Image 1 (cartoon, one colour):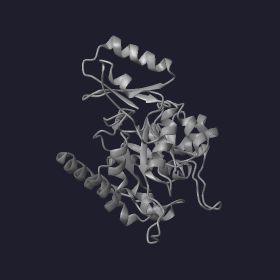
Image 2 (cartoon, helix red, strand yellow; image 1 turned 90 degrees about the vertical axis):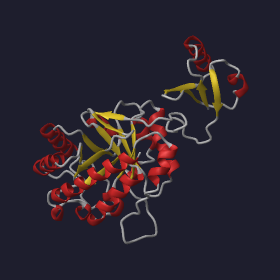
Image 3 (cartoon, helix red, strand yellow; image 1 turned 120 degrees about the vertical axis):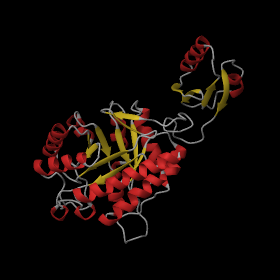
Image 4 (cartoon, rainbow, N blue to C red; image 1 turned 45 degrees about the vertical axis):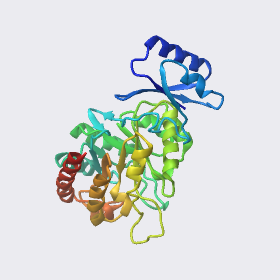
Length: 336
């Protein structure tokens, strides 16, 4: 349920209303926007009579939310959420590119790629230390050593880092990581999501291979219900009957999520298709659809990459793409 407050409502009466609702056992989600101030009620609101609330002179209107997700719902937070990560903002018209190799292999590799992607305009460095793979025989990442190498690249370049977590047991290892990524396979690892809800660190949540958008938003709700509202959603392609690409990029997810939620939405074109030549058109399509950013895989020697070399761009390809991204972002922002 959402309580829409009148403009210039008496502050003392608003506080009295909040105290009353809290005594009744409801959690409160407060949103002060340019158009209106809202009180979102978290809990079972079936016992509340809407007429009682509407009779209060500080209340403009009362609306019930049908969707099961509350904190992630745009109705509870009409304005776009902007997340500040080490001075770099994402969401609300702030477009960002996250780039780097699929997996961290050596200190030279991750540091060289970090310097290249920074030089060409990326503002965040990605790199996998823990790698969930379909085959148990595939390269699984360097684990703690990989995290150490990623943090060395961070210190060398100043780029905030994004990397994937696999287990709640690994959480202490992520103290210096700037954005924790939850991969597609862990989107419904609810115990992990609950733990991430207890920390004050941005979480990049990827859509599962066969999950609906509402299921993605319910996973975001798990994190936000714990108190951490710094969630970035990532569409990375879903499994369909098509076999010519690894996955099928659901480009329609961007405008639909923008309608449903206030959270930033980014696209991962590398995993969506799994093919290098498709990264550019999918990236530009994501910008046109209104995405808040991109996550792009870049490797200094894709042919010898230990993981996902076929979808990784060379630094030179990334440079060319970034020039097109910059022009596209500028053009579509001028239309809004």
